[in-house]
Amino acid sequence: MLFRKEQNHKAHEPHDRASLNLPASHLPIFEEPADFRSSMHWRIFRIMAEFIEGFQFIAGYKKSVTIFGSARCCVGDKWYEEARKLAVLLVKSGFAVVTGGGPGIMQAANHGAFEEKGDSVGLNIQLPVEQRINPYVNRAHGFHYFFTRKLMLSYSAQAYVYFPGGFGTLDEMFEIVTLIQTKKIATHIPVILVGKEYWEPLVRWIQNDVYGKFKAIDIEDMQIFSIVDDASEAMEIIAQSRARDEFHE
Image 1 (cartoon, rainbow, N blue to C red):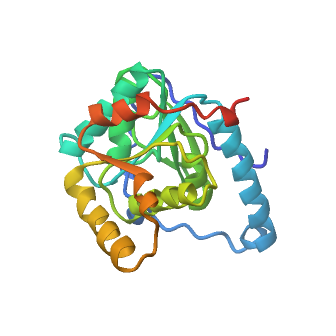
Image 2: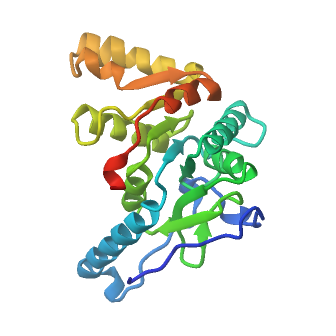
């Protein structure tokens, strides 16, 4: 392989990595060196390498759920604790918990999986000298490109769970909904939106304006996702979901 970014952190011993455990918009800007590495040809090879290594890494988790959400919430916040609880339930049911490896909801989910001694996976951002990662990830893989990381977060998950979040969370949610709507990925995969107070205003706009006023979607498209209010409701849906066997045969 051209690049090796995988890290196996010693299980159940959180590391002090708080200095770079930041929202993506607050990470230091990295510019490519002014040599062959900034050429389009080299970038193509680097992208290929990230895809190969990413698929190789994530395919090792035969049963996983990916959790998305705000990088800005803190320990003790309502949704941090619900994400942590959900991760505990997932590990007890045999799932690996996959996140973007950063702070906030991502850390909460990794925290719950870590304390339950399960697979706490972080697909994070590779910085020039180290990775941006929360202290509860026990298996990590870093990516230079956001779009390769984004694909791996959605590659083989048995369910997608979205807690309240910002532009990144909304982008990831709408991309998965679009892929299911257009049947580019299996239509049976649960898309679970956790937090009625956050998601219901958006869903009302989709129903009343996107569908009702502008006819830009079909009424059936509203069935792609479910809204719940806590970890136990989310787990009920996930427990009934079908395995993604197409990736592990």
